Image (tube, one colour):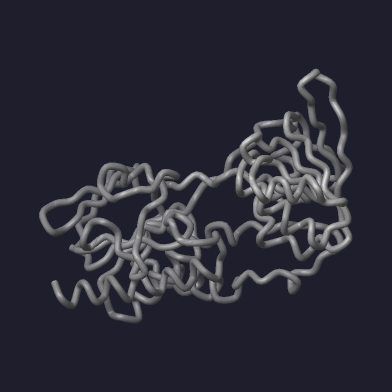
Length: 300
């Protein structure tokens, strides 16, 4: 019987695990890898690592520590979490099951794929998924934003404050009618292609153009310095559907103490309904989740 099982090895899960070890809890981290999205970062020829705030040093430190304490980590995917009285059973894809008094959900999110030629080839080589992280690198540069909803609007608006040109592909009519959509349509350095879809990513060493197709079937190339795919992320909540409350985007609903709707289950990071998918925020949320779980275990 474990005191705490933490599901996920990204910034939130790593931080939660190290805090739990510091609290001398009998803890197990179950994840397919360690580092999560920090294992990937945008590469563009004119940028330096110091220009982006990532929190990588702390994540790498926690990763190395958990790798050293291998008894506290199992490489596996969790398939199901279920209640067993006041305790919980965590089942994995390899057929193992673990009993625990408490759980922290930190499985993160998955990205929407365009499923077009060139996407895999240029993944994080001029093509990425987080303008909120990388927009500062695009001062006086040309950017393409791909997406249909609010996330694409916000990303385009942020880029428009610093980029020389922002081209937005695929916005829905509803998005265009919003106050932010109207503001973008009036911006001198923004071009909108609302009824177009991306059919190819082009480049040499880095992505430098996208091919888009209009409603008439005609294809056009948009030159760029980089592109951002900005559709809503997919929360990895399949293992806890029907157990904890999820919002309309299927993110785990938590309060300010990282409590879910089920006593003894906590959640942290991008899988939750908190504001902004950022590494530094996930680190803080992971710490909070373990402190809340520790308090729960003391009382129970």
